[in-house]
Every structure is written in C-alpha cells, then in structure tokens.
Image 1 (cartoon, helix red, strand yellow):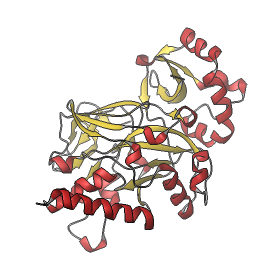
Image 2: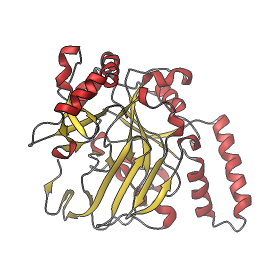
Image 3: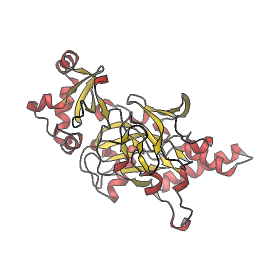
Image 4: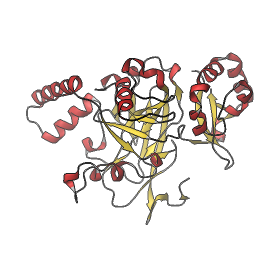
Length: 337
C-alpha cells in the first residue's frame, strides 16, 4: 500500500498532517522544500490541496520517500491519531443504499408478503433513481471526532445508532460540476460513522416541521472519522469499496458502494448545483443495511464499535458513560479534546 495521509500529535503538541507508511509516520513538514504548502495543519493542507496534490502523489509513490519513512519515521503507536479531515461543511446523503431502504421499508410494514413487498420497494427505488435526486442533510462540522476516542453516551438517549459510511473529501472548489467530471474534484476517501439519535430525527413536539438534523446528528463526537485518508489516486474503483461495522465483535453492516442509489459522482454533481463545495468539505455518502433500528439494538456504555471500509482502514470506538450535565465529556477523562 502507498503512504496514506494521517493527522497526529505527540506530547500534547498541536496536531499535524503526516504520511503513514508500513506503520511508521513522518510529518509532511519534512517535504516543505519540495513545494508542499500548508503542512502545519490538516485544514491548511486541504486549503492548498489543488496545488499540493501532484507533489504529494509524486512523493507518496517515490521509493525514496517510502525508504525515508521506513528508516527515519516513528511508529504510529507513539502518536495520538486525530480525524484526518477538518471540513467547513459536512453533507450526509440519506437513504442511499438499496438494501438499507428495502430493509427499512420491510421493518416498517411488517409485511406478510415480504418477497412481493421487496419487489415493490425495489421498483420504487429505480423510479426514484431515474426521476429523483439525492436527499442530503447538513451535519455540524463540530461533530467530527478522532477514530479511536471514546464516545460519550448520555443517560436517557435510548436510540443512539450507528451508520458506517464512505467519506468523500473534496479537493477543489466545485460549482455546477457534471457527474462525468466529478471525481476530478475528490481529494480522497476515509471511514466515517454517522452517529444518529433516532428518537430526535422527527421531533415529537413539532412533528409537522419534519426532520431535525441538529439534535439527531450534530452533537460533538457523533462523526468519528479516519483513521486515515487515502488519496483519490490510490482508489481505482470507488464503487467497489465495502463499508462494514461490528458491534462487540458481531457483524452488523456489510455493504458495497455499488449498491448506492446515487453514486459518489452523482452526489457531488447534485451538491455542486445547490451550493459551492470547498476544499476539505466532507460528503458522507450513505450507509448500508444493518443499522441499529433494524435490530432494535442501540448504543450504550460498554459497547465497542469497529467501523471500516475496505482499503481505508478501521476505527475503533468504545462507548462510555457521559458525565451527568456534561454530555460531551467522558467520566474519568474530563473534557473531550
């Protein structure tokens, strides 16, 4: 595997972007003289992605670079690993895997004629694909969390759910982009877990106003990302990526990006027609079947979530009891960083 991009810190220093190769890490600042810009922070580096991309590609594919990291790099275990992204905006595509939509429909209907109902739902999905557009919501960027940090679970939140997804990071300003050219605007891909509080998706006090994505998705810590970012040039077939998730060792989700109703390029094109995408922006591209609401099993303190995507790494999150009155803090750790 070629080097991947990580965001790390050591000895309480400010996080910095680095290359990870064969379990060893070297700061991107090592190559500032080669023309890399914004190497002091992951946000600044993505701001300069359009100018950095070709230089980074040459460096990452160079045997000399790989030999240097192998010889002088520091083991990843010595660092604290942070989210490999710092987006200004986070977009989440809802109901975008065929099997997840079918599963949700069957769960809701308790259909006696499951085969017939399945065929009807699949037919409606294909109609939507031909005639409709993606359904996208905003998720607060403050929800971004590190890939190995504890997830505080506040007492009383009884429907906190998981959603492993392929995260797509934008590398260039994008406006009115055609789907045929959309991948030209992708910096890379990472694992994300779109934690969602099901009981607040539709608020009981004002149900006629529709979905509440602030309360249901945007609390701090509700979007673990990483452990690293794989540049777009090292992902030859995004539709072949496989997102999966295990809860306490049991496989709950196991999907394939090719099952998306609207593919990654179509999502980028749709978004860019309604807003301006900026370097570093994150698109969470939908989750496969197997979310907690299907199993009637939600997150609680003590649970261990392992979420991964083939070739993009694995994050491991331990659910812990939140401190009373401080839902974003973890008992025994103080405030989240």
